Image (cartoon, rainbow, N blue to C red; front, side, top):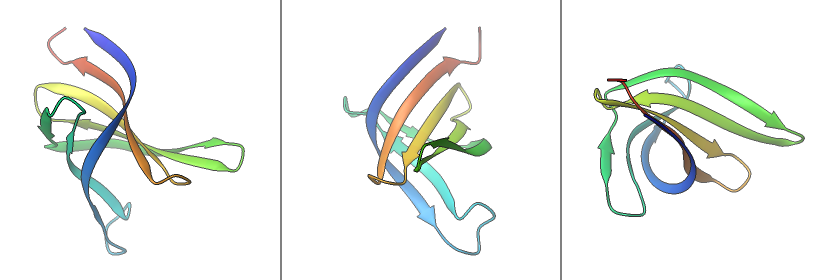
Length: 87
């Protein structure tokens, strides 16, 4: 099953200049209170929309896959996509 979303989320992330990508999301919370602990980060890539830059993070909790986006202009996180690995 696959769900395309654009849901605002709260993210606990580590920002550190010594990290390979400087920003690593550790866990996130949806508006319903569901908490997801990230166990693995796959692809991290920028997406450009004019002067605006979004960073996309493909992550998993071991059971489902997620795509998170970080809006560098507004400093907001969104859950863009959720998919079940068992499909």
